[in-house]
Length: 100
Image (cartoon, rainbow, N blue to C red; front, side, top):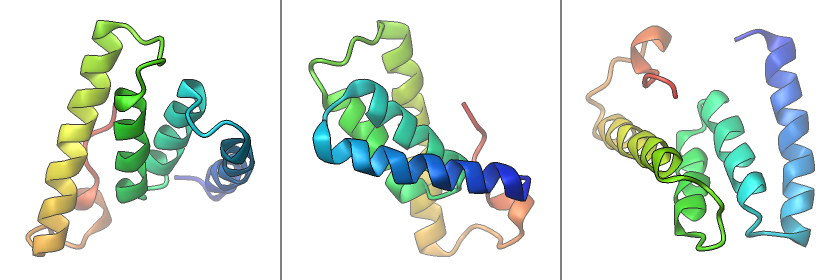
């Protein structure tokens, strides 16, 4: 990932965190934070926000979107579990889960 893109994601997260203090259960904010963390390969944090989004009863997302988010949660949970077990190779290309 290009450095400039990473910097933009980090800047976005700075603003998202500020917004979260004002509206912590905003579905769009939860989704944007999950995706940003996911792209930054900070999968534990991405999981936290994807799960929060699905648990948010006010989230205006379709059944199809819920399934996609749920599928991503499943992939990331498996990936994180394997990482914690040390069963994933350390090379960058082999450690990234397939994206959304």
